[in-house]
Image (cartoon, rainbow, N blue to C red; front, side, top):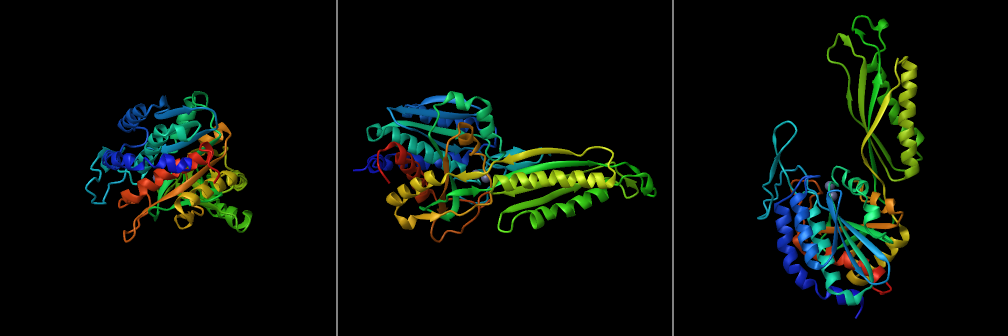
Length: 407
Ligand code: ZN
Ligand code: ZN
């Protein structure tokens, strides 16, 4: 019997608590940075399983040292979204919060992070219960605030790399809308890098009837918006992926006043660090040159926010994981995930350790069930076989490194 079969022989026992626990997490979602109850529940479970615990940056990390061998880290994100759930499920969330404008907003696990938590806890128990089948160290990392791009940075700022054993490889997974029971892998870039930039350009205010006394930031901003389109159209190699979107352009208050500044909010998506650097540099270059052309009296400012790093799967690790998945799930249940245009903050963690990683997808749509994308108010993964597949995927990938099985 292989190490994987040996460990997964216990899955009926974890399934019995995973299904109700999943429903409990689903019914009690917490927003990014406010995951106190969720972390408390995870902490209770990991303690029961015999893990050494560290509370790091609003998340929790469990370490299971089990003799000589490599260290494998698997990360689950745990936060929910300000989305009012419309699934009609018996365990649907009815939790609400007050938003910034004083209105009431529903909260739900519309991105499926409750699946991630439940699967990683299941894998954590299976590995703890069958220590005879493997050797090395398993690190189960539960990260807050993925949806705001703040959680992985918060854990790193709180000393994560000094406080847990340095892993040799890191994994993360996401439930997506492909077929439940299948897993999707992809070498190389798999999720885009996302950058937002708040650009402020300065003019000289004047009466609307006296434009000769002004430097008009509205005309300046309009010229910038048009010229920015050339970064993708004229500067990016055809076939490379880049998106530059100006999502907001704001200046002035009244038709007869020329304002003194304009603010542009620009969003950028890329799959390649060189392309990303070129696009961001291009934005700054064009903005500065247009300011110069307008006779702007003050240097423009660039404020970067909501920055998601590129998720770039290591080809060697991804190949090893994919072969292990094929051996366990069978070829028909292992699909090519392709590139997903969404973004994630997971890769900051392996990048901070300087280690390779692989990020894969777990299908959540059962046959005959309508398919909704993540963040939809109707997003509702089938409990099974999704939880089993997500739990098995973590165990299989981990034992490809710690189990002595050669996939
Ligand atoms: Zn999400
Ligand atoms: Zn997500």
